[in-house]
Length: 372
Length: 241
View 1 (cartoon, rainbow over the protein chains, first blue to last red):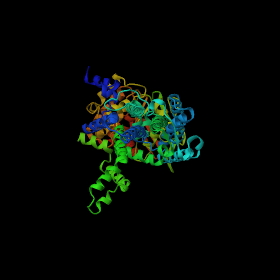
View 2 (view 1 turned 135 degrees about the horizontal axis):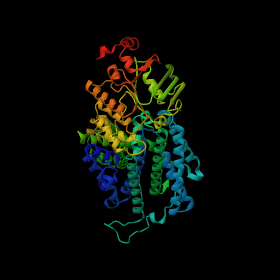
View 3 (view 1 turned 135 degrees about the vertical axis):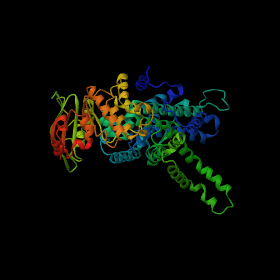
View 4 (view 1 turned 90 degrees about the horizontal axis):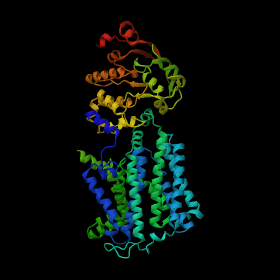
């Protein structure tokens, strides 16, 4: 085979890959530091029930899993396709409400979960197609405004339709028996941990998030994903190659919406509750944007880093500041500065600093450092 | 003249409040290379973009192989067999060279024989095959843009000023590549400001002025007539040798 024929083969056939490379769709982290951080995060999440006792670490880990899936799905839109949508939490909420309403109305069974999730997925797909076809032809800023209006309308609707959604109070519901704390999968503990329904619920969330992440990784590294990146860079050039930009953008919106819907369903299953503040709130949309930017846009690994840092900071910054404030007692001014009541101020300051320090996100920074 | 592949009849184009094309009439024969010449602002780029549907003609008709494409959307025009290489080295800089090429092959994997032929035309691309296209030099980006346009067999290539801003050595490489494309039977409509390159490549010539076709004929006739060159373009080829 000549050198050129070898290149032809490389262009026309998949590149030879190992198992990990296949799993990651040949999209490797491309930085040793990033690889190490990702391994620590994934291993930590996989082993959380065995590493930490108490409910807060498990709840924090479950929230990280849900937000990894949610932020990765948003990055498909923002980072890979260049679409700024504010309706992502609407699809997140549809997933949560789909499962919550089904379990509350039809009873705590797996069939209810399946029906609720299926109805939510169909509704999300229909809405994503409608928004995409009606709005993606207009200029980006108008599309963003339309999605903002639609998301606000959905939040108001969820609050007003209290007979179905529970209104502002939301819906509490029972889970299928296998996911309840009283359920025991094994009689004997493993490494001192009782494998109960709560642990099973955690692993359901963990593996759902992992599956969504790997599926999205496969999508962005497929020919379809390359077209999305081409559209992001220059839609007119993509059109001149024969690609129908609106159709591709709509398809990306639908895939992203479906992933967000599943993430919403997983959060509802974990919390055994769904309400406007847990899935539909505009502050969650801001959180998602921050996580994407901090992790690094246009790289799904950024979703893992961004979601982990953000949720950890949200969950533990106040505790850390409390400890720091106690440790600094006796010194003037400093204990007040790091008083736990000021945690939101410091959270904001940390994010501003990280955006300044890592304009390409943490993943972008680590990759740049590796290639330098 | 051989069979007409592309025909423009009284094409007018407005961009916002500006009337750019004032009734363009021309015919591009199948096979060979037609050069579109003219001063800056004459309407050459607008003509290519109008053919491609990137700016809609406000009136007139554009026929491609008998098919009216005047109001067709850009993707349909591309799928009909017209490839467009804009003047701004329009590649996708975030994608690798390989991904740029694969992206252009909409109907499936790039034919290996065709890829070999393309890389024979532009051997520099081989070295950067798996690197981001944004790392290429200006000339290499232009080569990639043309390679992308021919990744699949197309019936007509529209190329906008491929030698603009390139070093003389790259200009010579580009001329050789276009000679090879001509020899392979491609039909090319080339906008070119460099009269040396245009005269070396063109079989036919169209000269635009103020949004209209001011002259149409064989390139050899224009090359042989310094008076005509002076009248149409305000230059003589002798001064550009």
